[in-house]
Image (cartoon, rainbow, N blue to C red; front, side, top):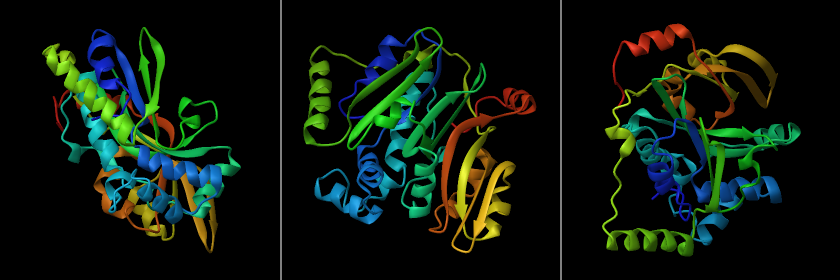
Length: 292
């Protein structure tokens, strides 16, 4: 169910059962990654790359589940249950896809020597709090995900003792999916069951939205910037046909303005930087488990 031929759930459940995980992130959707690879490596237009993905069976006729970030969100929900013992309502997880990407966004990334990938993230931001979201991300050349191309998936696990580990394999296509299904069927023969060990450990973790994410935001109307309440602006550019800003937006505010982010005039990508205040951490620690 998660990342096709990559046995990430089995590893989260068994290998990391007593490990302190700082975060999991990666490329969980082969369809959107195929499209982005064709855009960045071959210069194809988004619509052309999408049509190719559909013709090859990687993307559905209605591709919004893939390109809109819904499929990786559902997979992130499953992975978070095994990694942290948190059962989160998917509606509480922000997902923003790649369907609004423009030539200007692609050119900006190329000028910085970045690629854009659709990256689901679960990260522990304190001893008791975990944040989750799915956003396009500017990926640098030294990132494991930079060279994950086409229908391949990649998962990075950051652990306290095992440090950073990377899993790589095909995430879309008949044979990889069939191999994953066959593996699960074989496991049933010896009565294998997921134990959800982290859940039963009662580790007291809670799901929070009290964090800010540094993003690149391309927009048309100034109302968009005002509505999202962007702070700590480090870069801004404006001309008649292209406006963008780089700054921090609270995850809570992004979730509250999901509909605004679906506007075709808006594209958003994370830089990978998160910020949060000690006041936020103290406040959420008193609230108990929420958003589950």
